[in-house]
Image (tube, rainbow, N blue to C red):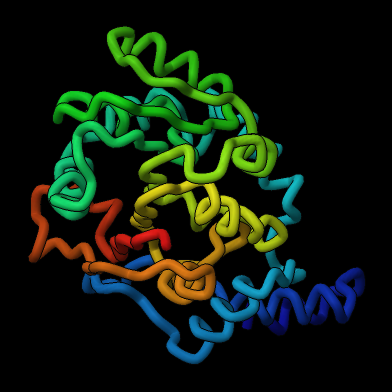
Length: 263
């Protein structure tokens, strides 16, 4: 009924109708009503292939629009993407991360998080004994939140976009690069970022991402396929579920963790 009402409006063009229909087909939540990863199998696979091949589809936001949004988030934002909210997240997911990538990743490795926000994950890693920490963050409000919430954290944070900063880093200069709910926001027009990750990482790449959810600024991918094409070898993977990891916050249920060796 909504589709019919939408189509009958005299100001709606055919292209908008097609865009609306595609959104209904391609958009999906991270989890279904039972808390399991939600997949429209055909459309999930098709969407992954389109995104991985760099198509900026008409039903997703343009890259600059996405970057402008992430730059502009403040503690007064009306949605949930507030730096202060991320600075108070529980540390269960970081405990999981440390267990997942051990023993390959050590406390003395240089570790970089892409899209680190107010560096909450880096703070918890420091509490677990990791001592060479760095990150990239586009939002200056998040960096200011880090300074307020974690003044004792010793981490080198680059303020800017991954598109600008990663190409400036030397090859094999970071032992481990990881993402946690960030790679899904890398626009398909910025897919070269994954090549840069493989170039800069000396030992490992780790992704903790939803590989099924898709919306206007969340871009689903199969990260094993992406990094295998770049010559990386997947060492291990696990699906994060409530049953297997009850100490992890629910926002990470349905995420897939993958560890790749860079060759």
